[in-house]
Length: 222
Length: 138
Ligand code: SF4
Ligand code: SF4
Image (cartoon, rainbow over all chains, first blue to last red; front, side, top):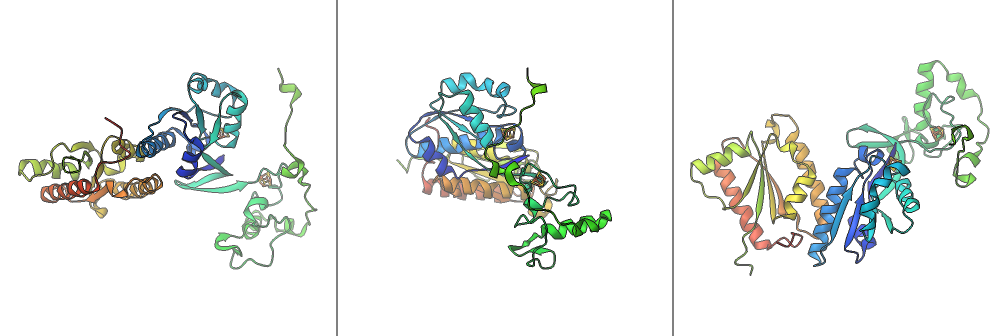
């Protein structure tokens, strides 16, 4: 899922500026699970903004609404009435949610209240870590199911580099060496010979280097 | 103005420590500030960040009375809420509201003396701080 983190409140207050009627729109899926932009976080941010504005002697009216998802037309349609009566919308979804609102409601001013950080999973309650860089050409079959793009700090496809020590990455002794993880996993799978095959230079045109990506399925179109 | 100011306090009381202590304070006539809004909770861990924020929006200070650290009936409820209070403190610092307005206290189930004294001190500290500038206009 998509992992995010609330922006500093001062940055959010600066975006709101002098507006005194806003909507905070959360998202009930990814960012709710990573506790950055679900209904609870929407309420906490609303409360913090109200107090900050009361302190400045500029009270603000805040509506809250958290659709199940903010990245699909059907779900954001339920925000319509609240958007209509708001000067500004603060989105607590990922950047996709923000842009969904912008495209669905071109007349609305929408600001991001969350920094979209990575694609990952909750390792345990309160701890999230990155697992996929959405490179568009998955190689997990060759690496024992461990992603070299994000688990290796240098995204090496023929790792490891010479900097790993005791299974840790040279960027930080707390960070596992991605290629050590790959080695250990391939060993368990009895596929260490995968490491003798050289991966050719990756075609990054399927990733961000190819510009904005799009998938079209004619068979699914209505 | 400041002299007449009566701080409005919400006290979340765990029913295994804070609440019996509050009852004892009343029964034993240990004086604590009038008008404290006592909210009974099954464990201090049940207090969520939003409860603290909302209580502060409506008042001047929030106190959470929890069991001693090794004595939580649900093992870690009090420690988890201590972490939530730290999180709230950061938010309050960001919005320029004194973090001293939210306090967590650990006490035994039968400590009416400590309950009353703690609230008297908290009340005085809030009185010195003055009204919560973030509070809703009444
Ligand atoms: S808007 Fe973003 S955070 Fe919400 S469900 Fe869609 S992808 Fe996940
Ligand atoms: S190889 Fe690419 S698609 Fe596969 S997990 Fe890594 S970044 Fe994601």
